Picture 1 (cartoon, rainbow, N blue to C red):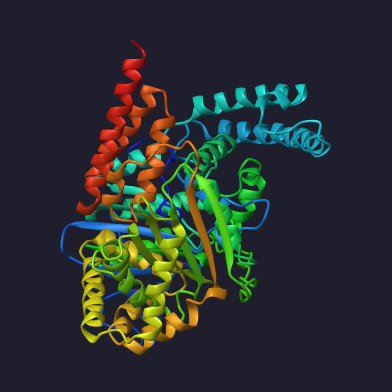
Picture 2 (picture 1 turned 90 degrees about the vertical axis):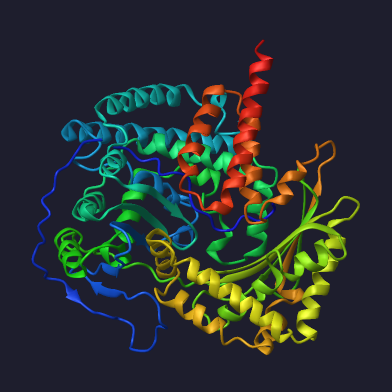
Length: 602
């Protein structure tokens, strides 16, 4: 679908394999603690939690729950694409990959040789960058058309590239691939992954309760002693991932353009995966500098949920995480903010997709007092019993699907409505139907029973987020990354106090014509029709389904397709039940594509 919300990143593609034995002995605690940091009464009832600040400034959040002998562990770097700048866009997402590449002791057979190879790689890369600058100047003069084309590389660049490739081969011969992940997996860990969005980067896993000290050791080791092995090779992997995610989907490039149209000044204007020219040119020196600023202990929060003794966990945290040297560079304050939009913006895209419309309005940050009312407004419009489904899908029938989303981020926010046109209807007709629903919300009081139903659903969803250690740790990690650990709890409580007048007020204030951007998507001439089965899946799952199908159709190597199927099978057991039908559908598409390739080979 035309709009891609903030989403988890791909499977952690880090390195690593060796078995470590750690004594389960707690160290004496020297942490400076505060429990709780929040003033009494500021947080509504929720799971009991403790907050501490370690001696180096790193925050620690502990939520003991003795429901099963497991622990969900995670840490949040309060940095995302919004903290980047032109020239290094995509670097936060690159870190999501590089942080699995190992340390001084993990991921290498001989760290001394590793250091020498990395130093020599940097020397050669410096010469390659100088040659790239000459090629870029030639492109600006019109002498070549595209830096990325092999035929446009100079002879000197190709010579340096061959030297660099030989150094990478030598480094790989010295590496122990996937050692970090393998250590965790051999010790019973699951859900080993990470994600990046505009505001944060989060690393997480679940593990048996008796492996807590192993978790502390591994995480402290990769934070203090990380080694960015295969930096430029992995950067190229990220570049290819970016291409598959955006350039290989029907509306991928358009979606990035629409983001850039919607935001004028905000750094939310550039994609989380970065602009292609930036991703292809990020240097290790830039990555080291960025790491020193944004991955310093003062900018990190570790969270644990599960079966542990808080006193023992705190002692381990100080022993391992608290020993990491504090950073010396302060995190720059976010200064730039989005100016008030003065007129409606419109965007037209023609792609191999079903006709659709996306409408976005500027709203507020995550911590803003209007965020709970916007959550209720979303729930009124969205979902199987929401007004979009009842009125524009089942009622007037102009659309096959409709969804709404309040996306309140750390610094700014947006409210988005997306709907797909039914055959025989245009996106403009769907837009008019959406406008009628918005006008009705502004002009007619929300019936008490409808408002209470929305509140009940919101409360049920909040309780579901407490159903497992993993869901709970991710919930608090996201809240922390958006600027306030307790805010999601507060919003859940405040939603119950929202009135019909509150909903009318935020609709009237934010959902105005001059405050919005509209994207109209029409089918490109000659494009084939989309499988109607996709419309049966939840609207929020449809973008992922479409992009995965596009990737499947563009893959002609059976081995790659079988590898995709293996990854799907591995993740299937970890998916919530509501996502299983989508995974089964994609698996069938993979089998269908393998059958097509098998037939064409005969």
